[in-house]
Image 1: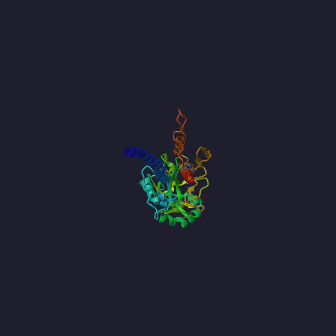
Image 2: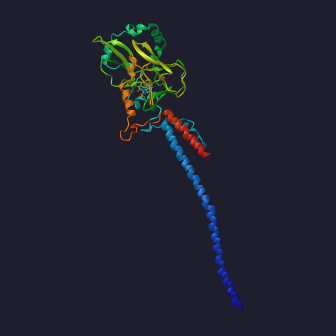
Image 3: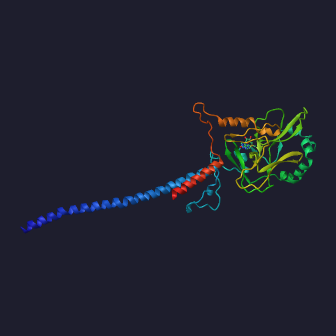
Length: 359
Ligand SMILES: C[S@@+](CC[C@H](N)C(=O)[O-])C[C@H]1O[C@@H](n2cnc3c(N)ncnc32)[C@H](O)[C@@H]1O
C-alpha cells in the first residue's frame, strides 16, 4: 500500500512539474516582450532617426551648395559638423551650377566669353579705320576737356595695370529675368576702382547689332569711307571681363567714367560708396533704362539718345517669354523660379524648422 501511495505521490509530482516550467516560460516570454522588444525598438528608432538626420543634412548641404554657399558654411549643430580647418575646394557638378559663385578666372570656362583685360579693335577693318583717329579732336573730348584729362591722370595707370586675378568679386545667377550679376566678395571702399569695361571695339555701320546687351557706347566718329556718323562701342558679348555682368539699378552703388587713354576711350567703374560683402555691384545704364521687376513694369521714359540701346528687342522678347501662358490651362509656361535672395530666405526657414523639430 505504502508503495502504491509513493507511486501516486511521484505521479502527482511529475504531473505538477510541467505546469511549473510552463508558467516559467510564460513569464520569460512576457518579460522578453515587455523589456527586450521595446528596448530593441527604441535602439532601432534612435539609430534610424540618426540616419534620417544625416540624410537630411546631406540633402541640405547639397541644396546650399546649389545655392552657392560653400559646404563649410553650413551652421554646425553637432561636433561632427564642425567647420573644417581649410575651406574645401568646390566640386564642379555639371548641371548644378545655377547658383554657383564664379570667379573672374572661370569666365572663359563657364560663359561663352573670352576673358580679356584690355579693349581691342574687333577686326582689321576697324583697326585701319581708327588709324587716323585722334582722341583730342573728338567731339566728346572737346565738350569737357579738363574733366577727361583729370580722369586720364587719375585712372590711366589702372588701365595699364589691368585687373588680372581680381578676386574681389564673384558672378552669380540672380533670376531668369536679370540673369547673372556681379557681387562683392570682399569689402569695397568708396572711390575704389571696380575695373575696366573690356571688350572688342566695334562700330555700328547701319547694321543692327544682333545682341546689344553688352555694348557700352564710347563715342561717335566719322565713317572712314562715307564720312557719316558712326557709333563706337565696347562690345563685351564675345570677349570681356567681369564688368559685363554688372546690372542696372536706379540707385546704383557704382558709376561709370570715361577715361581717354592710349588714344582711345576706356570705361572704368568706380564705387560711389562703401559696398558690403555679397552686395550686388550696380551702375545706371542711363536715365532712360528702367528696370522691370517681377510683374511691376515701370514704363520706359519717352526719351531718346545713346542710353536707349540697352532697352532692346532682346529684353522685350525675354519679357514676352516670361509672361507667356498655356492657352488651355492659363498657367505660366515658364514659371518664376526663386532668385538668390528668395532662396536664402528659404534656407533660413528650413534651418528654423529643423531647429524647432529638435526641441
Ligand atoms: C550688361 S548685361 C548685364 C549682365 C546680365 N544680367 C547677364 O546675365 O549677362 C545687360 C543686360 O542685363 C539685363 N539687366 C541688367 N540690369 C537689369 C535690371 N535692373 N533688371 C532687369 N534686367 C537687367 C538686361 O537684359 C540687360 O540687357
